[in-house]
Length: 179
Image (cartoon, rainbow, N blue to C red):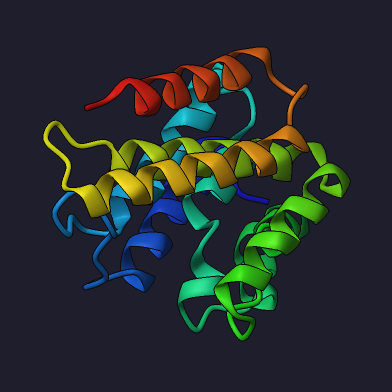
């Protein structure tokens, strides 16, 4: 098994290589790796760096969903726990968006403690990416829609980390108060 620092470093490396050339929605098409770094950073912050496997899974949380990476590949390189966390937060992209969203709401309370933390960190990052200083009507509507839905998902994930729950609440409050 890899040491904590090496595990996180190798997860960041794989995430960067697998998401190479991908751009993030919002924030002016910034590199997708920025989202993964933000999610991993949030998880490291709220756990005070105590869970390298969780932080590694934060880096990798979209690799199955967005790239050709398999759960087995992740298990071989990062261990079963990291692979299970990533698999648990992976959406079935063959389903329509509305159905994927509903499944996230319904499955959230049944996720493992670590998967719940990843879900909350992911929602924080995605809301932050939608906050603009001078949003168009379309951007404002997207932010409102996403924040409303994220609150429903996060309602089923709360209670595992008070700092993360507060960070989510603060992010939603900022989103609701932005112009």
